[in-house]
Amino acid sequence: MSDRGALGIIVALAVAGLSVACGHPEQRVVDQYFNAVNAQDNQTLASFAAVKFAKKVDRWKIVSTTEEQRTPAQLPSLVAKVTELDLAFADNKKAYLGYFNANPKEVSTVQDLLKKENAKIPPNLQTYAAEWQKFTQKERELKKSLAEAKDAVEREKHNVSLSLGNLEDIETLTGEMVTKTVELVLTIAGEPKGYVMGLRKYDMQGTGVARVVSRWVISSLEER
Image (tube, rainbow, N blue to C red; front, side, top):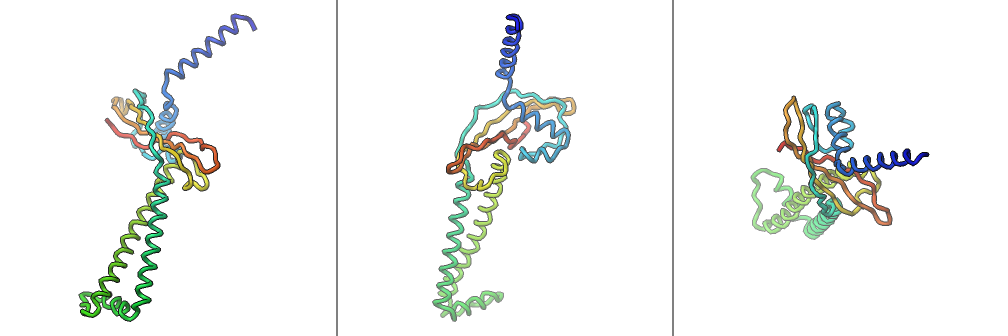
């Protein structure tokens, strides 16, 4: 190869590198999102976006991006909360079964009375009724909290899976959530409008496992 040809290749590579450096690393995911929006490709959108956009976008341009913000990933603490509530529920059940076994006649009578509308508890059973209702009220509260905690885990598992893929033992992963925002100008029906897009990904790993490859997920999109 001639010196002139080699020089041409070097210049071309330098220009290409400069173009990447001057561009936005988020451009690819932004392009992918709006191309899928315009094509109404819901399957593709569901694979990397947690937000839908109903309007056709003529053109889009990234104006600026913020620095990455890192916070502890929420999934480990949400899983720990479920475990904590499971134990509390089991402890309460053990306690009220023990109370029932110690006072079977009185508690059975209280249970029958509480099933009746406007039933009055006799004075000699009021202490038993109060104790039993404490157990049942706590059970209702724990059952509700446990259901909410399990829902929160499932939602966050879905968020993590969008970034990391469908991994086994995803609940055991620990690490960080990374977020940033992208300012956009979207041209919709010929009119440019400002929007802010939220991006999120997870840098997580498991015990004895190398860091899992993650990708950016579209977490929000709002008009400015």
